[in-house]
Length: 154
Image 1 (cartoon, rainbow, N blue to C red):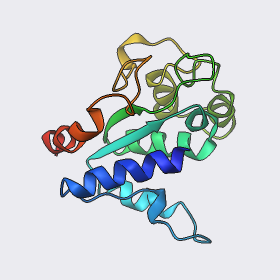
Image 2: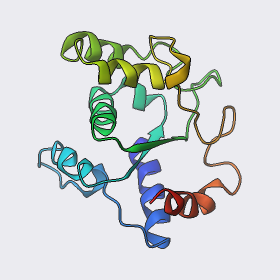
Image 3: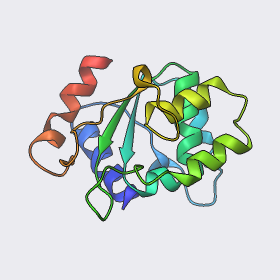
Image 4: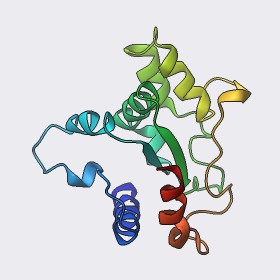
């Protein structure tokens, strides 16, 4: 579902006249890491939050790179856990494994975990999602307002 949510966001941004790049723009069979080159030119990253987001090592790597390049990150809550709790609240094991594996000495990676409330409890780094749980971007007019919100940050 994450890629479908991503497609919805890309469509909203394009309607608002905002250029964007996502994993949807990487042709099948190509190395997805081309995404990192695009991050260096970006100002804002929209994180499509769902349970699958927190179980994806590549999503964690993308968030670490976004922090390294000083991007403004807006977490967009699209899907809750099956029990109605916020995504990632079940431990986000894949992100923790990525951190403990290749990212363990990186303060940026540690801050990324903390900002999404994963594994660490560092209050000043926490990001608030849009909207706050139990709402999601699929409820109400939030998608319609997304373009205007992003334009304010550019």
